[in-house]
Image (cartoon, rainbow, N blue to C red; front, side, top):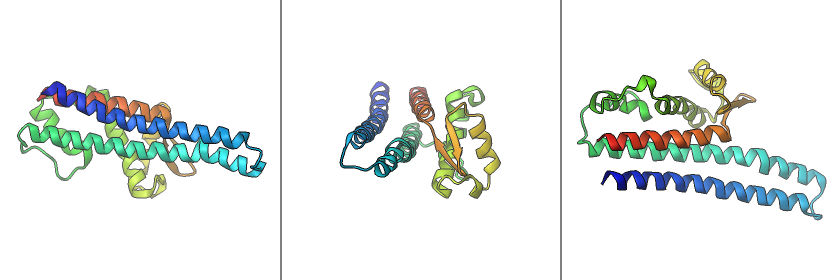
Length: 189
């Protein structure tokens, strides 16, 4: 049964990644078509180039990032339920932090050295910035923490004009960390 759950989780996560790649390919196709078109003037071509190569891919990465969080939280909840709903959730926390005692006390994980877990925790801070302030770092209560994560992320996040965004490397790393960590949690039960 665990193998089926793990395979289903990976399949669902891969569907989200496939959606990203399909839509990103659509952007690239349209960028090429607009660049080759003789019916579009240079001002429109420049605008479309900015849209299809910068703005829309950024919005797509944010959307996929949030979908992956939904996938993660769904799997954490289902795994906790499958474990018999042990009384160990921290309802004062959100997202992955809500399950920390479940991981450490029920599953006996040592999270301080778990790089996938640590990256997901940092991503949750970035996710909260995207959700609660449209990515505006200066509007966050914990803006120093957001800036520290951006600076120490090895190119996974960027700040541009006071807005945080996730890079291609960041979304790829997040997908891998979610896959690794959700599998680890599922197998541990």
